[in-house]
Amino acid sequence: MRIIQRRRRVSVAAAVTLTAVILAGCAGADKAPSESAEIDPDATISIGVRFLQNSWDPSKMPGATIVPIYQFVYDNLIGLDAELNLIPALAEEWTSPDAGTTWDITLREDATFNDGTTFGAEDVKATLDYYAGEGSNTRADLAEVASVEVVDDLHARIVLSSPNVGLPEVLAGRAGIILSSETVQSGDFAVPVGTGKFLVKKDVEGVEVDLVPNPDYWNPEAVKVAGVKLRWIEDPIAMANAMRSNEIDMAIIEPSQADAVQSAGIPMYDALGSQLVAISLNPDLAPELSDPRVREALSLAIDRKGIVEGINFGRGLVADQLVAPNRFGFDKDLDPISFDIDAAKDLLAEAGYPDGFTYTMAAQANNKQLAEAVQASWAEIGVDVELTFPAGSGVADATWVKPTIPIATQNLVPEVDPAPFLWRHISTDTIRNPGKVDVPGVEDLIRKAKVTEDPQARGEVFQEIAQLVRETPSAYLPVMWRNYTIAYSKDLVGVQEWQAGYPIIDGIGVAK
Image 1 (cartoon, rainbow, N blue to C red):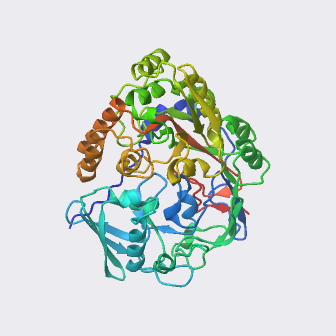
Image 2: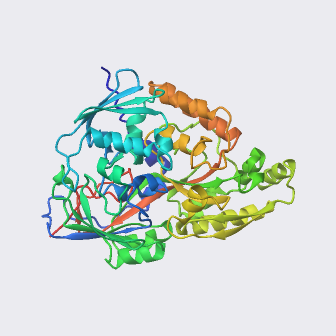
């Protein structure tokens, strides 16, 4: 039996080379207490977040940005460590005897749900069947799952319709968040029933979530605090002010506020290329966008370098591809996308739109300046956009759930393995591509990547994908890889530089 545990590590050396200037700005801040400091077991922490869940049903989450919110109360089948390596979680082992078509999962025996019921293979089957069903936002992640079989209480078998050597990475993401089979059957997600670190004490929708430790959690060493308050703070300035005034103990700080927060002696670290800011296009709501020449013109009329350096204060990377420069699958030989207003005008004229057109474009609050910069450069080629800024998950709702807006900025979180991320955003059969923008040949290449075990050969497949997407722009125009600049209180002990998302507080405590 062959174990396929793909433990792909972020290339830290490459990331540092690419972002030396970015990281230089984070040096010199006061450090947190020594790791040997005594931890106060009665202390609680408050964390600022820009998004909260709108339901405790993970299948309804609008985007992967809020996966860590769910992971406070639920566990994944497979976990990720701070450097994006696969690690055991509810699954102790995952093996494939046939190069990725059948996966045998061995489960831990010491996990229980917070309602007292025992975790087992029936819950894995119920969860994955539910996620793969109609109406689930995680359906595309599990499109190849033909069946989930209960071998016995602690063993499940996942059978795919076609091989996918990257399935463990999928199960380390949102599609691997495990629910109680009883919850799935009842459909009642008002109070989350999970095997995770915390229980929900209070949930005020769109305001805050109060959490207390789960006394029966299988890994108690991960929980070092007596409680957590997740506070929704959408405005970047308000977030920075809350951090500086000690109202919150941890936050993602926008680049425009980072220097001020750092100058207050607050420690920070950067999670490199954590989020792709891209512009989504839906031809169903704006037929001109179905022409690849129009999509290419819009792409050429984006000043990516100016956005990264000017608006994002250098805390990020130019996005020319749907894979980050410091991640597996990036094509380092592909030339950058130029910023060329004249070429964009020529393409629009060639496509039959010499006078441009008018659209509405939605953007999140943290993309306001970026959207305004794109609005200004598109105006130079005759494309006028009216900006709107829906609160909370409003952008995702208006572009993916019930599409009403044709163009929007999107904050996308890549997986460890590029294949599911590319499939979710390029396939013509997913909620993330409601206008069914087709890039000929790419879906077949993504399928090929899923069955290719050799890393070098797999990397070459992803390079082919990058080249095809450059030739025929997809429904997503990449703009910037945004770093998460994470600030944390000097009173916190055990802070790790998690690359897997925010907020993750495993092992974090408060010094006495």
